Amino acid sequence: MKKHNIIAMALTSLMALPVIAQDSTPAVGDILQGINMFTPEEGDPACKVKANEKYGTQWGVDMAYGLWNTEKVSDVKRHNNLALLHAQLNQRLIEDKANGGTWLRVEFSGSWGLDRESAQSDTFFTEAYATASGLHADAMGPHEGIFPEVALMQYFAGKRACLIAGMVNLTNYFDAVSIANDSFSSFTNDGFVNSTILPLVDSNIGGILQVELNRNNYMMVAVSRTGCDSGYNPFNSDYCDGYAVVGEYGHIFADGAATLRINPFYTSTDVDMDDGTGERRRQNAGLVASIEYTPCDPLTIYSRAGFAAKQYLSNSAEFSVGANIKLFPSREDDFLGISYGVFKGQTPCDGERAEHNREQVLEVMYSFQVNDYFKVVPHFQYIANPAYSTSSENILWGVQAVFSF
Image (cartoon, rainbow, N blue to C red; front, side, top):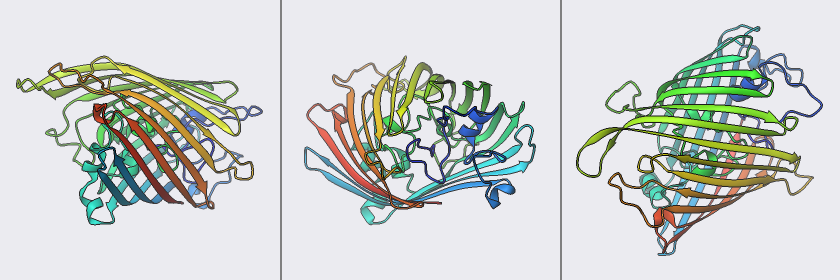
């Protein structure tokens, strides 16, 4: 999970590509620092270095309470009452001011049901709610404590290149649309937080190469195993069949106010065929593109679109558009978020096609910053054609109370 929002930047946020002021000149390495680090690099005159950063330690911790309810036309109602914890650590192992040094990255994520129904119905709650687009894992959590990422990060070439290897979480780096990529204080639907098509896995063995081409362009490529579910041993080959290759080209323009991202991908995995022939190795490929733009301080907009070649292997198409709006000048850290998306979901391996395999989602949320450490975020989602049922619709509402330091 990425932890950055252009309009309401939390103190512990992981920075996606920052909007650079028009009267400033970005330094070499700023793009990769913005993607990987929790705070501006040491020595940046715009940031006073905290005591812990002098020793090469950066962290961000979010503790949240989430209450969620879903209501269907059939009057089936379910709720989830959750405590969530998310923590990330960057620890410098070897200092190298010229090149950026060697770092250890660790991420922990967990959630626990606060009543019997919440503790027992995590999968039941989400699967009954949608198919192509569901409530994002960061909002629901794994109902246990897991480590999505434990990896080494090595900068080189004067901070213009970086290699990350180990058990990686690809959502921390790729498709990081900043106004959507923070489920603790922004959108919570899967289709808005990240692409529903890109194979952005966590808890799998992989590596990422990042290169800053110049002050306006960068490229990344990742190779990762895909078969290991969160919380399982990534070295166990019984769980870890298949791999994915994900790329990203990013271009910053409009004096730093806009970012275009293009993400091609390729996957190869064993698929359990529905025709009874057992598992077969299958490949898939596709392309996702996104753009975000801040035309003025109160408004940031984004759009994402993508497709995959083989619909029986993944969601096959998506389109979403959204905006964050600061409504009150006196409340500069508060914002209203609105997003709409259409998602074409996966169909069975035997070739059967659902007649209406498109879900439409509308989400409205508001982030209210109480003080520097605490915010309250109510959410509302309306889903048409959930699980491809044209006679049904889902309404989901919830609230998250988030303490960050």
